[in-house]
Every structure is written in C-alpha cells, then in structure tokens.
Length: 149
Figure (cartoon, rainbow, N blue to C red):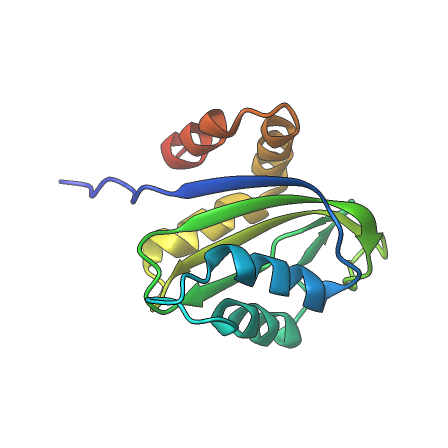
C-alpha cells in the first residue's frame, strides 16, 4: 500500500503575547496569517471564533488548542503562543489558558488534517510537544508530529 506522506506544516512560535481574551487571541493569530491577497483580514479570526462558539477548545492544564479550516491556506500551520497573562476559555478543569497551540488547516479539512488535530489533542502527545516548544525546539515538534504513528 502506497501511503501519501503528510503535508509539510508551518510552525511559528510567539512568546509573551499580550492579549486579554479569546477574541484578541484570535485577532492576533489572524494578523499573522492574513496576507491581503489569498487570505483576507478577519477570515482566520472569524473561522476560529465560529469553531470556539460550538465548544471551548481549551484542553485544561492552562493549554488551549484553537483550530479551524481556512480557505486559500497553502498548507497546515501550527502557531504556539505563550501569553503574558492567562485568559479564561472555559477549560474543563476551570484553569485559565496561558499557552495556545493554534492549528489552521486548508479548507476543506482532509483526513490527514484530522489526524494531526487528534495528535495534538492526545494528552501524551501534546505534553511532549509543549515541552519541545518550551525548549525552543520547533524542528523537533514538526518531526514528532509528522513521524509518530
């Protein structure tokens, strides 16, 4: 059986970001992805907000995994954001969010995109990924995400 290789994924790290709530976090992410040509201003913020309105993307332990599919996105993007101050996101454990791993995938999302999201949601996987981000090892995050069964 010939398996397709996973698509490349862009990773960005942003530390000590000053946001006050979920809306300003999504606006910050939007400002990073908007390019004025393929992806218009506000598209990413709107997609993330729509997803968040269905159910909180906070995982607990101070971590959130906002995610959305975005039209005209060239390839998946994972943005790790450590906030200056925690924000409320209705986490299952009631803890405010201090770290966000925002996953953006192409619209419509593929089965590979769903696998990537499931890997990030997995408590054992996301603990390891967060530790790599905290150590400044983004290249290892990509390898870990794309090569794990």
